[in-house]
Length: 334
Image 1 (cartoon, rainbow, N blue to C red):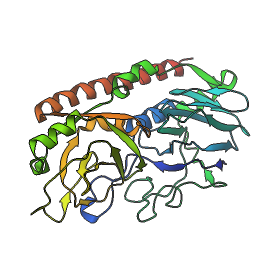
Image 2: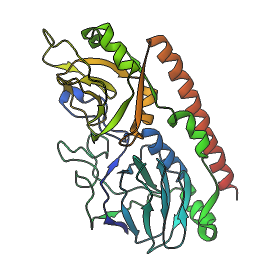
Image 3: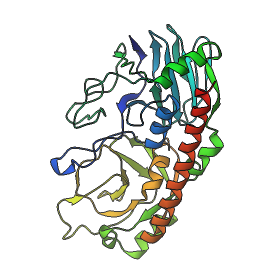
């Protein structure tokens, strides 16, 4: 049995946590741009956190279910529904055979993640089912979804999945989920912390000051490779710069015309532009949920402050995940 993609949306692909550690072989890391939303969706449907989710961008897919399925939707602000029920973010639902999941009012939504209990049957490469668009491997046939695609479900059900099917047979949803207020700690701010790297010295002090004082906006030229920003141009030194430099997710490069570009998951493994800094890792999930036109403001911090903030973020994550596990255990006792 399967799901059928009646409308593929703008850009929909299967992602997990990606393929870290293969950059030396020119393999992009890939993976879910908002890996927090990805993991929350999996935890809500009692999946292993490494199970692939369907990442949908800006304009979401329309999906028909040919069998009952446990689902959760996470990510940006959206409204979704089937013929019979409304589907809200960060909550577990039982979708019946024949129902069609549709989205509306997603103009201010960047990315939404769909997890299905038991997982999808996908192509695996280098221990990941993330879609690598460069070599066209992984995910569903190594590409984004298209209208009419039929994706088989694994139905790799655990005891928890079976119990959830029983519990939701009549109610169709649980009486618990994740409050959006609880997630505001991570997503609501427009300020992004930047850590200086070796390339920062290629910029004059006044250029760095302009960079931190300017309100940038996410441009329409944004994809899984990088996010181009509209706003104040920045001048950097290009003389004597190495032809190729190592880059990572969150590296902020400056093109020759002065446009900043933030590298994302599908970035090339080597860069040729000056680097003004790197966005702190704990702000990358927030960055993934900023749609076109969103305001971004950058603030430089030292490594010690970044490490302290990362500890706070990790503690918050643990509390969030423990809360989901606690409610799931109560659900198993019903």
